[in-house]
Length: 455
View (tube, rainbow, N blue to C red):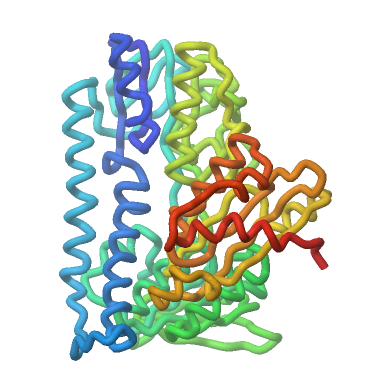
């Protein structure tokens, strides 16, 4: 049985983060992957979805040409070309990564399971690792609605395998995945209806943020059925029939396709973690400490599988924390980072730190500052004035607790605020910063000038 210094199970973004330094230290490395190399981001997440969103934005802007004095003529969508472009970009990223792994490591295609705390099996092959890193990510939650076994349904993977544009897409789930796909496919010409159990969409955001997102999408023709409880699904001549209850009444909707965006679960069930003595949380994530170590000190868990973050950037940061701890006994910890993410509807919604709702719940004495994107010259120049900026600061210390930038350029601008928070700067330092005109960022110092006590 071959023994390695490090075994890596899974090839998400943390794998590419940690491998160069492991290799530079002349460690023997085995990498195991049972699915497509690159993990969710490259294959079914960021790379392909944002490629699709980019095509959808072009379609949307083409329809707005006359707003800018540009008469384009009749627009048509070549959906097969849209998907061809999506696959060209994601496939090149995957094949390149796999070629590199096969060159610099012992690469084992197949599903891994633990035999004991140092031994991993891939089929009939057994290998041993002094250090083992679990980086198996997460997957879409399988819905359990009555009748689900009788219909063809989509999750985030399935949408990327579409060969034709849905005539009418039903989406169950009013959060980030549902919103991104819903807007994109609507812009390509699909009829789209979103069903959400709650009273508002993207419920993790402050209410006014969700209201703006809903208005943007409704203005583009997306329909919402909020407060809907799904009862069952069944086949129909058109594709699928969804039965649901809303406001105490039985309702139904018929669509050509149905997408379930009802959460994600960690990929831990096939690993046989009890054989290694690795503990799990109640939700199935691997329990880790501040350095991503599991209950076994030589076994680490990075990325979505540990429940400490659900994004590519948190996975990468997990890898950086691991390297700092593994080689230098350093002080980087997963708890030292601020929550930060973007939702890529158009315009994008970017968030860092606490929302106002969270700050209130945690008992902070805070101030709030807001600015509508319609007040931003750069947004006016681009005729993209939907959205708002919002900051939450601690009144006594002047520390920034969190921010939302919902509007053109927000996904880039949020980094300015994230840097200030990481450096623990008072917001007054941002007010003293000179930023170039004309940009969206230049209004951030002024955003802090209208801080007020929340109502």
